Length: 176
Image 1: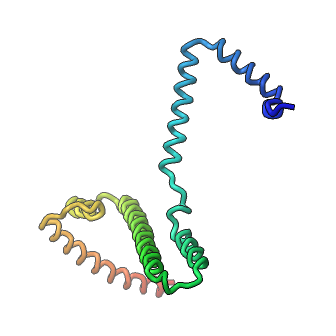
Image 2: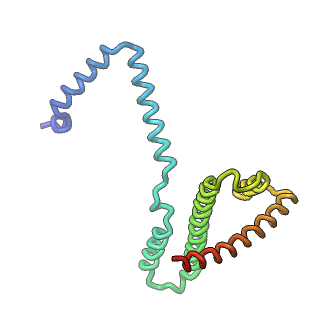
Image 3: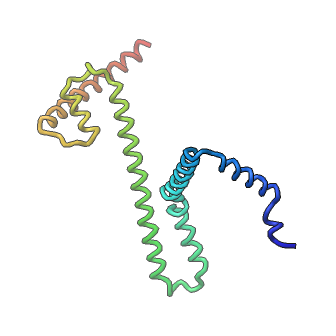
C-alpha cells in the first residue's frame, strides 16, 4: 500500500476536479476579481496577525511566571545574584510601563466623558469666551492671558454656585 492512497481521498479529488472545471468556465474578468479578493484577504490576514500581538507575550504576569520558572531551575542562587537583580529590574520597569499605559487610558476615557458631559450643557448657559476657554482646556491647547482671566472668573462663580447648591439642598430636605 502506498501512502498516497491514504493522503488523498477520492471524494476530495472529485471536489477539486469540479472546482477546477467551474473555475475554467468563468470569464477572465471574474477570474481577475476573484484573484484580487484572494490577495486582499491574504494581505488583511497578515496585517491582523502583525498588528495584534498576543497579550501573553507582553504581559507582566507572563514575565513573572518566566522568572519563577528560571528561579526554580536554580539550585545555588549566590552565583546568580546579578541575573536575579536584572530580572527584578526588568519586572519593575515593565510594571511601571503597564501602570502608565493604564493610567493614560483612564485619563483619555475621563477626558472623553468630560467632553460628552460638556456637550450636554445648553449653549446659552455660558458666554462665548467661557465656552471657548473650556474647549481649550478640554483639548489641551495653549491658553492666553485673557483665558487665564476668564478661568479665574469661572472658578469664582462656580464656587459661589456650589455654596448656593448646598443651601438649596438643605431647603429641599426641609420641604420634604
